[in-house]
Amino acid sequence: MNARSLLLVFVVAFTTPIRAESQPEFAVTKADVTLAKVVYGTSEKPTLELHLKPAPAQAFHAFTQTNLMKTVSIRLAGEVVSAPKVREAIMGSTLELVLADEAQVIRLAKALTKQE
Image (cartoon, rainbow, N blue to C red; front, side, top):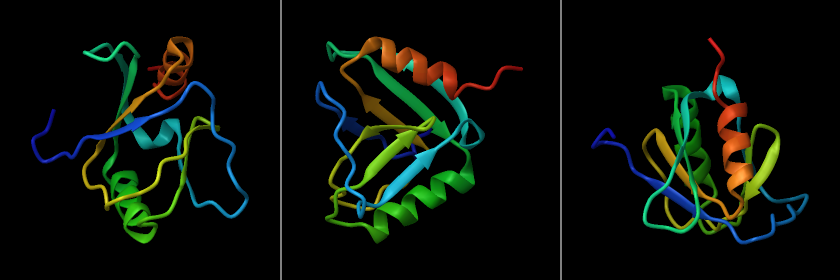
């Protein structure tokens, strides 16, 4: 991992939170990602590791900076997977999302990986 990247970890409960209509949302699509993989670490739950391209990484930084102390939705491949409260602006291109459902993590990694 690049030392300049700030690692972002969103821990998601066993149910997907419902997004309020006025809640800011950041969406990540296959076009935004250079690498999506499933990682098994010290947590009992699988982690989805995403490496964003420079423009989406900068957009995510601006999004988190604009939405400090607000609850936001994170949408991956068309699916809301997290609704964290932004406590500080996030810089870097690597995101890690710890999700409760292993099948969901694998499905999202596949959906966000380009087939060459």
